[in-house]
Amino acid sequence: MKGSNKLTLYILIAMVLGAVVGITIHTQASPEFIASFSTNIKLLTTIFLRLVQMIIAPLVFSTLVVGIAKLGDLKTVGRVGGKALLWFISASLASLLLGMLLVNLFKPGEGIDLSRAASSSIKELSGNTQSFTLQNFVEHVFPKSLFHAMADNEILQIVIFSIFFGVATAALGDKAKTVVKALDAVSHVILLMVNYVMKFAPYGVFGALAAVIAVNGFDIFIFYFKYFLYFLTGIALLWVVLLFAGFLILRQRLPALLKHIVQPLVIAFSTTSSEAVFPRLTEELEKFGCKDKIVSFVLPLGYSFNLDGSMMYMTFASIAIAQAYGIHLDYGTQLTMLLVLMLTSKGIAGVPRASLVVVLATCAMFDIPPEGVALILPIDHFCDMFRTATNVLGNALATSVVSKWEGALEDHDVEVI
Image (cartoon, rainbow, N blue to C red; front, side, top):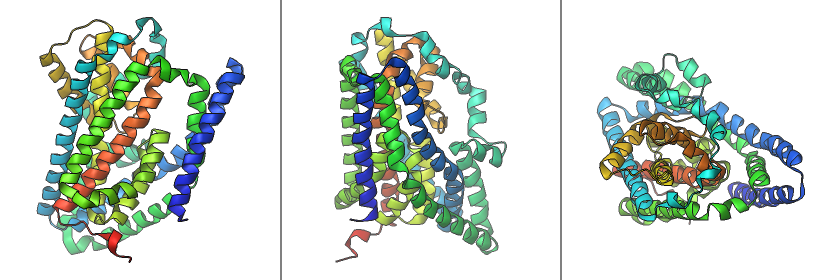
């Protein structure tokens, strides 16, 4: 069995063990022990995510700069960037509109018990809503220091700096070859580090699932069955839309792409962190046949501009909360909400529980009681699993599609007979 297949197997085993241990603790232990167990077992996940986070910033910087420099001239950079943004904007609008359509069709908010909303549960989130004023949003996007952005893992700020640095490097031509060669070596060193870090993934997965199930048990699915079922319906339809769009362009290569990204999807699903799979996704897309220069340029952009699952969820959740409070939003208001979400979702990379933070800010903006966010907190972890995996799928498709449009998609899967 190949190493990558072994890791996937270990991750799946860790998911099962985490669920078993979690439900055992939930049903057999005292509340005090459950709280202590949940806090301590989550340290495994914390270690894994911190190990991944330590390599995200240098990897994004080195790969994006090298990717832009290898594209050659500024005309090529603009062409590839334009194609990437075309896909990002189209996918974002489709995701937002789908969420709006489903929440109006199914009206999941009408089945939520408002008495379960506890305003104290959202204090942690409400502290972050200030970042969505126009001034702070701009400050969140544009860096004042590369080192500050790297220290805080502000992916969008790192992307902005890397684009300027990469464009300047490309403009210098031969004079900058040494810089490009050095950063290319750095990116390969970090990708090797990824292999070491990923060996800890099963432990992180085990800790995440054991902790959340120990606290909430499986009753959480029953209690929120209606809301969760409709959300899963939306995610399934979004996958159909994304895969159909991908099939129109990639044709028979689509199954091979899905085979390559199954491990990143499983890790993203179980850890609810798309950052955790960025390095491995980079590696798998190159194995699939995408040119490294396209992957290095498009994928980091996608992590900031292409959050398909999160955007569908934000529309779905915001309007569902309004329904729960009996607030009627006409379609004009809902479309305005979509435009707001389209903008605010572009600067949330690296913000903990980012989707809920944006939902909270949006509710306040449209006079919807923000306490309603507490309604969806108990199942947010499970919803986050699906929307995070969808974000990864969307970015993998975006990178592959742009590679195909650029004639830079090689068929590695048929090289070995």
